[in-house]
Structures are given as C-alpha cells and as structure tokens.
Image 1 (spheres, rainbow, N blue to C red):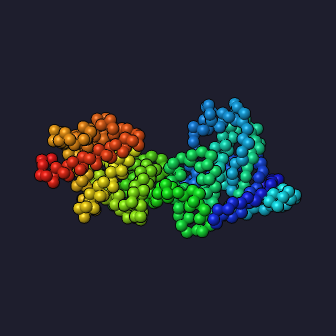
Image 2 (image 1 turned 30 degrees about the vertical axis):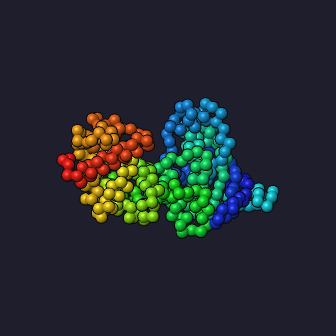
Image 3 (image 1 turned 120 degrees about the vertical axis):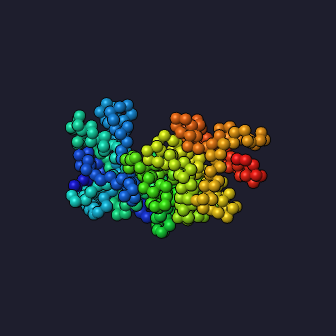
Length: 399
C-alpha cells in the first residue's frame, strides 16, 4: 500500500527517551479492517489491549456506530497504528528539519497493528453493513515503526491514561510489564518518575504476587484465578484484578514493602489456605457463589486483616498456616453474652463470623456491602474480635 504522508520527528527530554518518527496520513477504512490487535491474555502477557466493549458498539445512544449512522460521524483525531517490520518513505518536499512530505510505502506482507482506535474501526466495520460506501471512509491515521511491542504498549498506556481512565484490570498488567522493563533498561528510566510512582509500583508487584498465587500448586487459588480476557468458568474463584487491588495496599505497610513477591506470596498462600480450611463452602466450586467471601467484600476485608494476624503470629514465633489458622478460628467463636460492656464491638461480630455470616441469603448485611469504608470496618471488627478472644483465653475464660 502506497499513500501520501507527512513524516515528522518528535522528541522529549526524559532520561533515556529518544527521537521518534511518525507518519501522518489518511487511509480508506476497508484497508484497515484486517489490522491486528494485540490483546492481553494469560498466554499473551506482552499484549496490551482488551476486547472491544459491546456497549460502545451497539446502535444505541452514545455508541460509536450510532454516531456514524445517525449523528455527525466525524472522527477528527487519528487512529494510532504501528508497523513492526519495514517501511519505506520517499521524500518529495522538505517543509522543516522535522517535517517532510512524501510517499509512504507499507509492504503488502506487513501488518498494521492498532495501538489506539479499535472502537472507531470496529464501528465503521459494523456500519458498513448498512452503508457500504463507508468502506471508503477516510480514516486519519498516525503510523509508527516501533520494533519492540513494549513500546506499542507504552504508547497505548500514555494515550489512554491521560485522556481517560484505562480499565483497572488492564492497567495493572501494563504496570507489571513497565516495572520489569524499568528495572533492566536504562532507556525507560523516565518511566519511573513519570508513570511508576509508589502506588503504581505496588500494583505492579501485586500483579507478580497474584501470578504466584495462581501458579503455585499449594495455593488455594492455583488455576482458580480468572485472568483478564478469560471467559468465566466454574473453577474460577476470584478475579486477578480483585486480588491485585487489595494486595497492592498491603505493600504500603513497613512490614511488607521490602518483601520479595515470592516471600509475600508464600505468606499469603498459607494465610488463604487457613481461611479455605475454615470456610470450605466459600471455596468449593459448587457452593462458592452462595457466599461473598471471595468477592470484593471478603477479599478486601481478609486481606486488610492479614497484617493483624501476621503480627500476632510473629509475636508467637509461628508464622505458619497453622499459626494463622489459630487466630482466624477465633472469628468463628460465639461471644454472645460473654463480652464485658466496656469492650466496644459491633453485635454483628459477637456471633460467629462463619460461613453463614458470609452467606448471600442468610448472612450479615455487612457481607454484601461494597464500600471501602465498610471493608475497613469489617477488618477492624474482626481484628477486635480476635484480640478479645485471645485475651479471654489468656485469662482462662470459657470461649
């Protein structure tokens, strides 16, 4: 394919950043319909896209298809594409040192890869079924010639995160990839300051931890974590993004911020195995959906409780599954009528915090809450109950 194009050079001053070449042109839509999209999946971890959102493509109000067929239908901003192989450019007119007009040739055997704009192209493709002339719709495009797939992902992240929020589960995985590159490649050092702040670094490390939880045969989550892009299956117990979100918050605590991902994963495997043994129906494939323990409420509350249990076990000199299970089992004690009035604890936590407590049908209303404030409240009350039971046992009380 040969098209007239502007060749421009752009640059920045970040540490390791280099000058980049862009080709600006317009291409008939039909020539873009077979472009590649590099989607992230468990088996393609260098991918960076997610499947298109059907809500943006249905012929309803606010959709891109409707915008084309019933509204203005103008896309003034360009679709961002990459060619990983060879390109040739024949200069015709030099406008400035950094801008040249000429002919761009994209060899027939080279694939165009969509970095940004998949919804626009998919919308045009669908609209063609009603208006065939849209095959010739001129699509403004910016074309890069990046050889490294990581740089495609980086452009995708920058373009999308600064215009609108990237879906969280995809952002976690992109941060994970960036974190790896920053640590080994000097040319990406600018990322450390521009994108990888403390929060993003914790999220990247949490993604590594979740991968360990998904792959370690001793983990209660082994082969049971639903990854981005996977269809939900009966075996899936929890989504990777849910675990990443809450584990990343643990990394801000002094006791855990310097731990390697492997070390932290081993601790969390013991911790969640203890929980699985105490709440078996919440983990069983056939019954797990009747409970909220492996939804946001339970995962957040128990993850936030982990430092409390870890600290108590450290005091005992027994940071093991059995050591953690001992303290977690205190949650299932019935303290109704056994607690002194000066012990301030929510009555919901005096009764056993057992499988019934986490039941969708019969459990506490708190177990179905979805706010961060409630997750922390549940954690605080569970921590209080553990401390009360531990104190009663020390004093020889009947629990």
